[in-house]
Length: 480
Figure 1 (tube, helix red, strand yellow):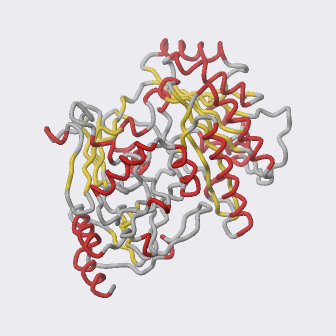
Figure 2 (cartoon, helix red, strand yellow):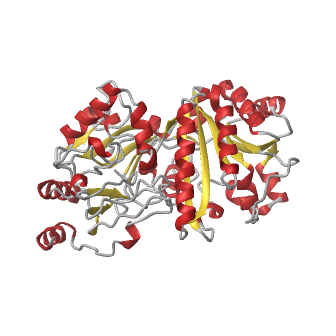
């Protein structure tokens, strides 16, 4: 390790032994302590690191801000954490509405840069300083996902570094240098999406932007039952009139208003709030959208600005990106969720079953649900706050998430940002040919198994030469 550290210092200038902040995250997943942390300030440092790590068979965990709520940022035991937050360059092509971004580019930063060109983007329920590239690589979703799909659909190419230091550019930029589309070349971009950093470290990503409309409105529709809200979203999704439709369970509103101790829901209170987000360039277009929403809504839509006059504490929901302090800054410190993409025709069933499971476990049933890509599929997500300092509560949340994940799989849903606890259940149902191709790709791109060796590979599939098989581990921030 002394010689390795000296070589790392030659590459990066300094090496940090302050590994404790990188050993865990806010989820229920157990900590792992890396040997050291290095911070990239130039993209050229990354291939040097990976060649060295491959030579020494040392695991590398790419990381940006570590705010992924899937346990994916927990590093490999005894390995190296590669901090990519210092790489934060942005290049915007305003004509073709695409941004070349490095891992350290935040949602707030890209919003400001895009705004200079009359462009905008959609935002997830993530803090403003979270990484755009990280979220896109793990197929996250945001406030334009109804219209344009998950963030994986927004990626038009990447520049990545393989385990042996090879640089690769995908999409149209591989020929022209301009990242305008994934095709018509073979779609190698997919080799880096949803792989959790096991195929390479992504250094730049082409992210789609959209025109900023003159008018924009967000309205909330209280729904007495979750099934009513889901039915409303399913009816509105195919119309093409809305950028986003999202359902948010009642505990979020209570927590946002400062109510910490939640008992059972009052039957007179809404169980789900549907948030409709839409924009246009003329008032006439806006009125068409508003009229259609009012026609189908079970109660009058309430514009968010009117809602804020009644309840100023709900301000975090008014402007995106935003930090939802009631989820991130509560006393217990723990936050976790299990979420999945799947069929709309089983969304109501999955929501009801999940709500029941959370209530039986004594947890506020915070469900997030939305149709995606004009209603071609949808998402269900169940969020829990917990006391991370309590072993019993941490274990209970881990068990609940596993059971929720199995239920979602039974409903035909596929977990996204798949946590390690659900990996055996997913692998059990995975097509054998798909599983074999995944393993072949990994062996070809990372023959020594240094890149997050635990991800997408249960213990029985790990080769004897992998770092994990010899006592190491694997994790991933979405930074790679």
